[in-house]
Length: 209
Image (cartoon, rainbow, N blue to C red; front, side, top):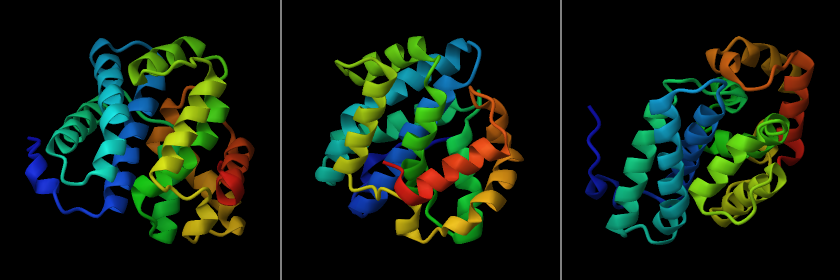
């Protein structure tokens, strides 16, 4: 049972709205990129992404806007349904970083997201077009999609590296092995070994975008 009452979210700090909203956006994107076709999950992932793209900036900027809050609740719920299909390396990495360094989950996902997208999106052009259309973007290439995600993260004040939230560089090798054991890694659209994941983590720690 999900109680989607926007009145309950009024008064939340803008930072928490940004972090949890970025988490929901990551749910929609990662779920849609999971290999294979799932008619329900793919459809709600795209609709959730459309709602989040429209209303997240407004909810952060206008925290008392009930329409924006309601749009975000519905978008988040749809994205949550979508990841019945699975997630990917953003969540696999974020789960392990959060477990070791007590970082906020949505914030960690938001920082890692562009790094993993640069790894995952080559070869996923058809899905990128569908996601870009859902978000109302003019640019529908993987590079353009990533640039727009980065712009939106900048607009809601997401830090540009994990080091800014207390994650040290020397954890990358250890976290990479743990991340590959996470169930989310198994549904990533592109295969990755420990070295590839370590490189992603090192990039996220030093300069995610």
